[in-house]
Length: 97
Image (cartoon, rainbow, N blue to C red):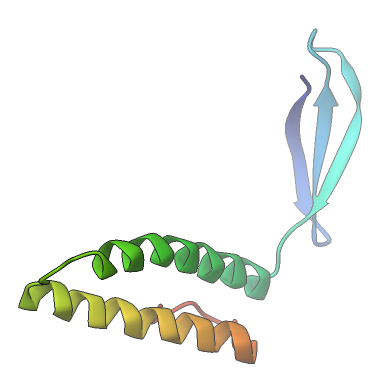
């Protein structure tokens, strides 16, 4: 297994030194630094994946309490906001999601 060590960031990329299992330097690697919009889109997608499990749990309740219904309504509003942001490419923020 290789290990990477961050050298620098700049120009929209992260630059790494790459070492082998023995600690010997075997080269360098780089990866793009995500834009704010890319980061927000990933955050929204992650929240929506978590929402699936919460929605399934809520749907399985036979008689949700008033507090559970209120909480679910709030979550649904946040989930809808996240979906709208993703669909309309409004990724300058993840607020309200």
